[in-house]
Length: 191
Image 1 (cartoon, rainbow, N blue to C red):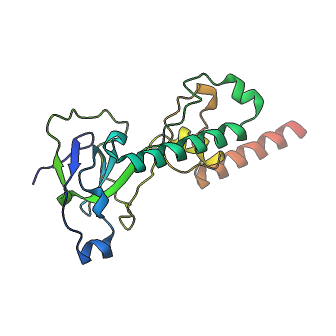
Image 2 (image 1 turned 45 degrees about the vertical axis):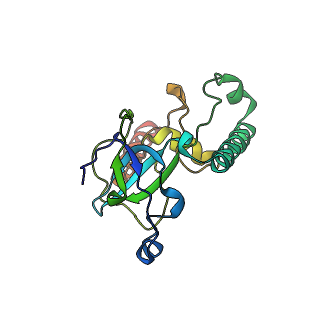
Image 3 (image 1 turned 90 degrees about the vertical axis):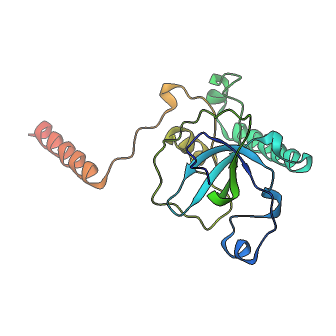
């Protein structure tokens, strides 16, 4: 069995679905033959694969693209006119990824496939939840925060201006320290 790393081009093996597959949920009959790039590798032996849309059958691809267009329209409608007018044509595009969580035993290297560049780190996520069949985890907090504010779930591949990027969330200790600092500054100004 090949050892995979993030970015490797892989294809999901075609095989019969077993009762164990139905229990675990890491393989369904339509997974067979789909190809894509390894997005994340988890300690439990499951692998998140970013599926190439051209490997989906026609019906699945049409449904995915229709959902993507619907979400894009909904996202743009929820933006204020000012923000919408500042977006470039490239930023107005929404590309939803199609990701599947499968067992590493169901993957094989894809012949002729070039590794896909990805922004996901090569580190293994210890907090993985392998109970589902899909994974929608954003690695960059800015698009994820923007998607959450627009009511969307999943990864968003929209370039952002520096002013659109939210600041990192402070820890409870940092908040307490800043609050204390603020209170001292108020007391110093009022004295």
